[in-house]
Image (cartoon, rainbow, N blue to C red; front, side):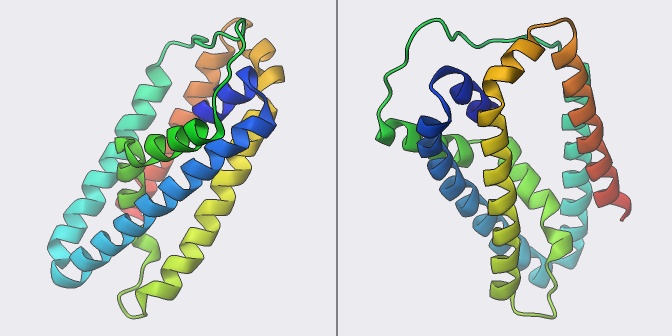
Length: 181
């Protein structure tokens, strides 16, 4: 999301779409790998799955706490033009998605409650991917589109800090839900 916002601020939404396509393919790859790996663990090692669920929930709470405590700073330089190729933007999006340990941890910890071992995994995976990809695309589009306006808003006072606190609180709540839900 931050990459979409940053690129939206610096190169515009239309060019940022190339990064979004790459990131969506990367996120889909991570989600598929996470679901298939978690499904395997669920079927073969139910106790290990329970531990994975607790560890995943704790990690989401940890991310939430770190987001809450983060100092709010803008780190975007929009003063110089950026001539980046479509291929480079696509690659940047894909690599960002598959190399992000938070993305892996999030998918591995969030998706298991939505997978039932009593039903075929493939149809469940298709539904999950549809929801994830649609949500991811709309979120990145909103971030990229709002980048220019958001830049002015975030440049004032402690606005980034409060956005981090809200996002961190939501992440922590998801972690708590995962552990106790």
